[in-house]
Amino acid sequence: MKPLLEVKNLHTHFLTDDGLVKAVGGISYDLHEGETLGLVGESGCGKSVSALSILRLIPNPPGKVVEGEVFFEGRDLMKVSEDEIREVRGNKIAMIFQEPMTSLNPVLTIGYQIAEPLTLHKGLSKEESWKEAGELLTKVQIPEAAARLRAYPHLFSGGMRQRVMIAMGLGCNPKLIIADEPTTALDVTIQAQLLELMKGLTRDFGTALIIITHNLGVVARYADRVNVMYAGRIVEKGSAKEIYGDPRHPYTIGLMASVPRLDMDVKKKLIPIEGQPPDLLHIPAGCAFRPRCNYAVEKCQEVIPELTTLADKHEVACWVDVRRN
Amino acid sequence: MTTATMEGTEPRRLSQVGFKAIVRALLKHKLSRVGLVIIVLLFSMAIFAPVLAPYHPNEQDLYSVLQGPTKKHWLGTDNVGRDLLSRVIYGARLSMSVGVVATAFSATIGVIVGLIAGYKGGWIDQIIMRITDTFMVIPGLVFVLVMASALGPGIKNVVIAIILFTWPGFARIIRGQVLSVRELPYVEAARASGSSGLRIMFKHLLPNSLAPVIVASALSLGAAVGIEAGAAFLGVGVQPPTASWGKALRTGYSYLERVPLFSIAPGLLITAAVLSFTLVGDGLRDALDPRLRGEGKKIK
Image (tube, rainbow over all chains, first blue to last red):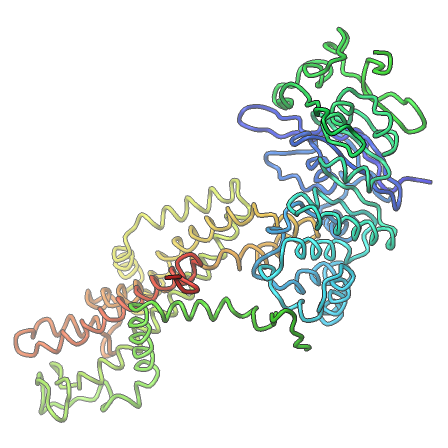
């Protein structure tokens, strides 16, 4: 089967006063219909930028997608016209942002904001879209939905607003939802509720989902496949099971060792990854992770490792076979 | 429409709190309450002038020229025997309409231009801002005088001059607001859901940038009234025989010793108008700032 989304060698650069920042330095992956992909990595590793790039939402200046192709339903989104990409945004590919508190317009009612994409993309009339907005609000489990359509965002709590964001995202039955740290600003119990909700709804609608997060627990629970990013590149990809059970990249191994696990001895200390996150202005030659890597060999200083296939879909970008050490 | 209640909240009613709270805060502000009362009085004077004025403003009583207050003419008469009270009441019509028309036009122009500058940014912004700078370096009254000498005196040219020198202020205010609002996540979210540039500008950026424009409009109304009176005083504004405060002030000035009310009455009204617009503008600024609105009561 042909994948729904094919990202090929995507490069996104930002031109700043201090120099060129290569936020995304050539990533490739694909995603099938109904699949959930976790995009993991620390702050500033290019997770969000790579997602925004897919929809051409990088503000230019200062940013630009300088290279690469993004095939979605057979079309290269990097090449289509501005009108065509607008038809994709919110309609075929929806985005849910990380800050529910500020992602809704304070002067428009909840109902208006949910109904807007419906009138925009599905061509519904005002009454129809309003009615559908009520149904969507019920689907994301907000009680008294019909009455709450007339409410303004400030009357809603963070969790409720994120539910509204999910309702907005689902509105046009998109093929793909990109959730950029959808639960980061919420407390843990609400996080779980919302993720369950999102997972359930995407399953019902057959929607593919990209979850961008630095929360490994979220990924383990909800993602089918995982891409681990470091300094704008994918360093390891595989099924969630492979990434968690058999991590092969030193960075992935470091990540796993730095979070607490329920099956771990409580007295055992967590092992942090030493050193600083990479400075994207001065990415060292060779492997970007080398300065922090315990396994580094001489070759790491010179040549950037490419992703190589280990098993069926498990790929890793490292010169060293960590299992031997 | 279902009016369901849940946990004691009624979404529909609560949604209107914003406007009500602002009006309430405005009324709580003592000085702006005074300003508001004066403004209402001035506007009623303007609207109901034919009912309120005892005489037609141009009607001459040549037997009583330059009189002080009498039973027949409460404020006295001017140098050609017209009833001062009637002249002053009709003068409100001119001042208020000039203020409203000029401010409405300049705010509209300024808001649209500022919106474009702030949203588009880059060289478009640069060009627009340099144009506003050019307009802003010329003082208002000089602008009026230049306009009058170029296009001839008359109220239309005064209004055009006021619009020309006040719109850049609105444009700059809106641009500044838009620059901060456009970086907010909901604007990005709107773009991500496929909204067009125009939609983002008018549905998302404009309503969220409007608060300071409302304040500026109130202040601009006062300024416009002042400029109109100034132009009339200098003889480049409204032409006789139209009743105008500025004109009456100037003519009365020559008879200050014989009939002081002739210029004092219009002078006081100009002051009252400008002052009350400023007070209301000030009150609005506090009312639109939730931190200064003083909602709730202080716990003692």
